[in-house]
Image 1 (spheres, rainbow, N blue to C red):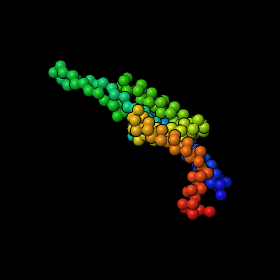
Image 2 (spheres, rainbow, N blue to C red):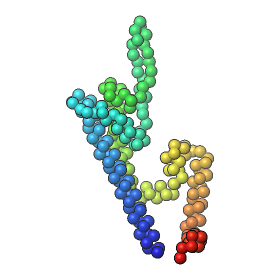
Image 3 (cartoon, helix red, strand yellow):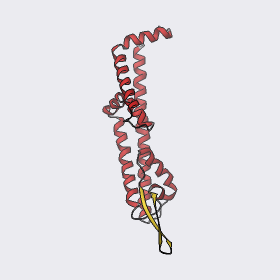
Image 4 (cartoon, rainbow, N blue to C red):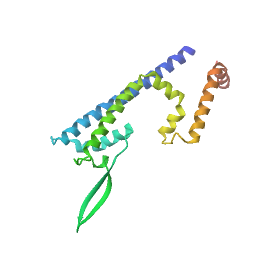
Length: 183
């Protein structure tokens, strides 16, 4: 029974690693393709980049890259100038000297992040960190700042409960089996 459980756990872990590699490899290839189209667009070579702007924005979001805000000024006549701040990601179709380097850097950062995610999938230290600091990673995923006291308390509770489970694993499994009436 225990060996079949171990086999299932190993199979599950392998599936998670394969899925993580596959998803990030897909995102990496897609990001590289859209970046190549962007470079053609910037070089004024005929490109279909404009239809990929939403996909580029989605990839930037998935990579965790924050949008840059660019100051903009426009003459409105009679000697007046309107100034504002605009999003670089929402204006990537414009080839201004202030937008292009930011978008170029965002693509390079996204490509680097997706490559790192692929490497992390096979890195045992990444998975160890994920398990040891699981509450911190979950709260980060939920956009809760890690400096909040609740996050730190949940981390301590996680460590204590993990230690208790490791020390009393056999007793806990036996107790759960008796509750569920599993032989």
